[in-house]
Length: 214
Ligand code: AP5
Image (cartoon, rainbow, N blue to C red; front, side, top):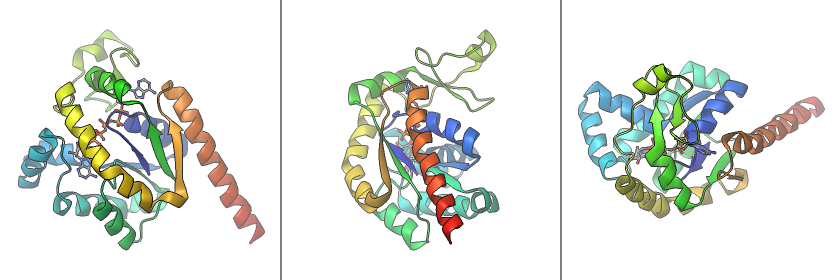
């Protein structure tokens, strides 16, 4: 699981983790944006909450994530859950369904950096890749011309999202105390990944040792 404030770099790190470890990336925010794009009633309700930076109600989001976690690819390869759970009730339900993380990665980034990351973020609708106008600019003019911005990526909305994050984060962290690693997310994306990579490598080594000694 990977957690952190809005724009702390969860999606960016998931791209790198997925590439190296071949896990199935499940992002609650992406599932919700797909639902909005489908034009469904759940999507319409979800957008009302996302517009004001609030958590989408459990009756929409909980089953959506559970169903994705139960798909054969997630079960076979292992999953990388991004932005979920975000409340005590989501964490409790997830545990009740029997989903436990081997590692809970917490990205720590000072608040003043987060706003700059949000307003500069752009997405490539073709590849899904995350860019930043200053820190991770598009490679070509062609990509630059097609980049889009998320509807909730404004300074005003990120402040609301941050408020929601602060209201809920402590109760979620308390549920995963024994598996948390805190990562400095304020450095370059490569340096952030190096910290995560080292924790994942250690985890796999410990697991291999356990299997070897059994
Ligand atoms: P969601 O889509 O999950 O948004 P978020 O948590 O606010 O996080 P972001 O996607 O904004 O940021 P990120 O941490 O992935 O950062 P990124 O890598 O893109 O959720 C949106 C909404 O959906 C919520 O507000 C809520 O309403 C709803 N929702 C979602 N989950 C829910 C749940 N569980 N329950 C109920 N409702 C839910 O990076 C950001 C920018 O910074 C990019 O431009 C990137 O290039 C740049 N960057 C990244 N890393 C670095 C670095 N190290 N140095 C410099 N720049 C960097």
